[in-house]
Length: 272
View (tube, one colour):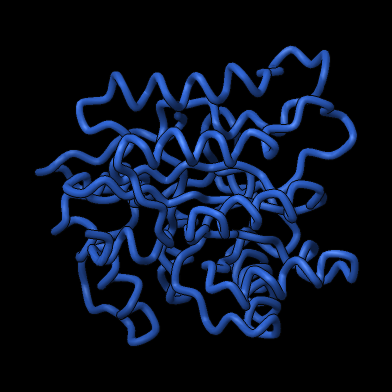
């Protein structure tokens, strides 16, 4: 994982004290509630794991260009009476061929949140220097939020940055817009389900599944509080898709006593 963990007694880099603007109130409340519930927060102020006191997992799916796994993902969630969390770009939400999938996500009661309108890279991969202006970030985020509201999901309060990568400045700007930044929990290879055949970073689906089950065995808290991130689609460059294995993975985790809840439920402590 490329973001350091927050530890009690240290001050995150996402901004100082001072008066909280009205639009920031709910975002600040979510962070405070997460900290009170022993969630893990990075030094940049990103929530990367929920409370570990109950065996609850947030299944998180991001989408931008591809959605070939959408039907299988929704079917697997439905079979397990599970709720997922879908963070989709504005470009994804505007695609007519994806509109039916988005409608099903909303109708089934899954979480729908922003993932950047244009899938922007916010920070340099090496030194994390901000690569966008505040105006550009705000315009992109607001456009993404408007598309989500247009889809009938209401105003979301959690934001997952594109490329799962940002810095403290982006977190602060997002908070000023009333959204709290979340990201995947480290410890598995679940997010590698997009890697393409023959690429240097390719990770096969069996290896991904085993990494998840291995983390469950080795972490002192298992997968409790995990934000387990996968992708709605990987595109034609990957033939070994992960989504056909999702139902089997959920069955294995269900046998271990886990429940699958929306990310907002996980972070507000209602997953008991």
